[in-house]
Amino acid sequence: MFENLGEMLVLFWRALLAMPSAWRQREKVFEQFFEIGNASLLMVSILSFFVGGVIALQTAPTLVEKGLASAVGGVVGLAICRELELGSIAFPAISTGIYGYPIPLAADVSVRAIRDDVRVREGAPPLVKVVLFDDRAFEAFVAASDRLLT
Image (cartoon, rainbow, N blue to C red; front, top):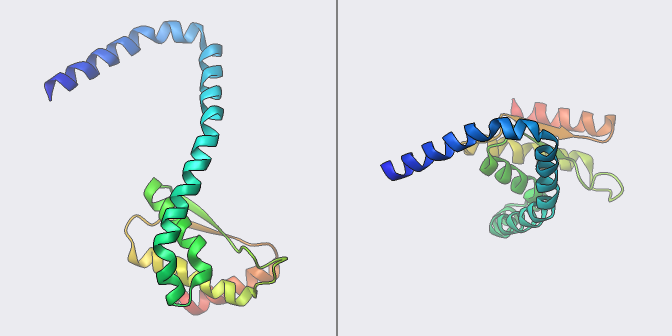
């Protein structure tokens, strides 16, 4: 244990000594931060895709069995949000536009999925933002919220 503590103190001391040099070369430092961020974007995207796929494969059979097949994506998003300990999540009403999924049904399923996940699970995001396309969708989600959350 003390070996690790000593190594951390040495690392901290070296970082403090390097501060003046890093400040003089701050343009290079920020360029490197930018490159590291952009270089990792593809890997993060691929990893997120596969992690989401695994969660979907684990939860989809149960949701389909209970008639909530359309909630799989939202539940996966909430699960990833919880794992990453994010402060909020955006929950879009997907497929209610050009694909023609009935907005009132989407509202009921979405509000129910959000409600159930927040009730059952610790670590649910404190803020869930439902992203809607127009006033009609907004009114349907307000009606579903009034009906299911009160």
